[in-house]
Every structure is written in structure tokens, then in C-alpha cells.
Length: 277
Image (tube, rainbow, N blue to C red; front, side, top):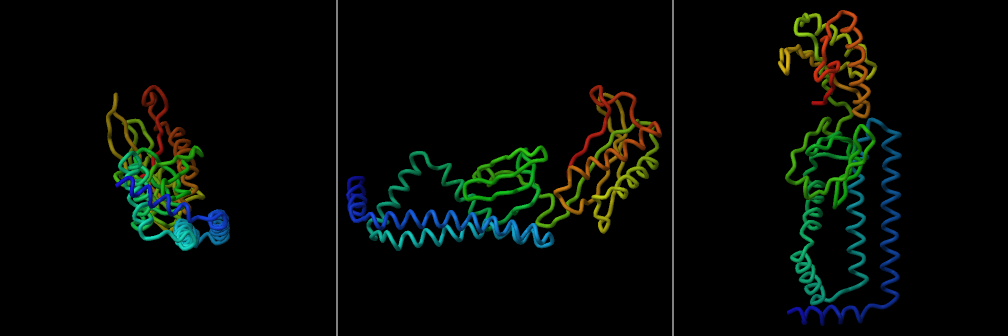
């Protein structure tokens, strides 16, 4: 079987000419240039039309995949392999997969599923496993995101197939943000919620069209304390860290003035942790 495959592949290779190889190389280079122009053009349109930003970002992976698909069909028409050669190459590919390319194929399948199922899209802020950030690249092999520390994270698409995914904004600009503050156990809960509402509504990053919710709860960890949770919507998820920081600073300044912060912090430091839900 292997001998037959080798003979058919060799026969096809002998039919290749320098002109065909050169033309194929030019097509691949042309596709790479076209993909680059497409991505830059759609990014420019997204920046010029903020309201349609997610629509243009959604077109990026679809356009990239379409260009490579058309290029692949074009290459096949130029190289013109025979039916027997196609079968031989397909069988060879299957053998290669069996010998160690399973992860690559799994990632490619994962990329196709992500493009069709669309659990997230470019520009979304998502958490995949323990990684959280803004999706800025969706490829056939991997997905890339940038977190709040401006660190680029690459996740193989094969891992995403079985991972839990939390999408903060689901294709729209705004996103819900949750800020937790930790107060003295004896603090007045109604006064604490009033400060929370004031801090949220005073923030320039708040989307006022959506509600702000403040919740309090008694909790114990080494000692009892009162947790104040402030939930509001940032008008553009790209400003999520600034929104968290702004609410935290405003609320803690007022809580400190009124003596509502705990004298000893969680783990020996002042309490006040922000998180996203």
C-alpha cells in the first residue's frame, strides 16, 4: 500500500513544472498580502465607525478563511492532481495524522467550529479557562487575546472545544462590571450601598441607560466583614479596568472618610478587590 502511494505521488511530482510551482508560490504570496490588506482595512473601518465595530471585526476571520479557501481551490486547479494522486495524498495525510499530527488537526477542526458556532468574536472580552482578556485574533489553529496587563495569550483551538467560556459582552460594546469592596463588619449596610450607588453614577465610564445594583453580604474569612458589591455597565468594554479602578477609588475614599473600612485588612492589608462577572 505504501509503495503504491509513493509511486502515485512520485508520478504527480514528475508532472510538476517550474512554471506551475512559481505560479503557485505567487498565489500564496498574493493571498497573504490580500489577507493583510483585508484585516487592516476592516480594522480601519471598525475604528471609524465605533457603532459597527463588532460587525467589521466579525468579518475578519470569515474573510481570512474565505480567501484561503478560494486560494486553495485555485492552487488545485493549477497543480491539477489526478484522482489517484488526490487519494494518495489524502491517505498520506491520514497516516501523518496517525503518527502525531492529531493536535494540529484537532486545532484546525476547533477553528472551524469556532467560526461556525461563534461562542465569541473579535473584540469580545471573554474568559477561557483561567485566561481573561479581549479577543483580537481568531485563526484556524489558535485564538489570541490580550489581557488587562497588555499580555498576549495564545490558546490552541483544540483546548477551547472542551473549555468553559465566559463572554462578558457577547458582541455588543457595553459589558457588566462587578466591583467588590470589603467593609468593617459593623458598618451600616444601607449607608454602604448609598456610597456604592454614588460612586457608580459618578463614574464617567458608566452606561447610564442600564441599571446599577449594589448588594451587601456578611462574610467570614479569618474574621467577619461586610462585602459591598457594586454592579454596573461600562459603555465600552475596553474601559473595563478604568471603570473598576474609578469606582473603587471613589467608593474607598468616601468609605475611609466615614470610618467604614476594616482596621485590619484581609491578609494584613487593606481590603478592596475588584472583579468582573
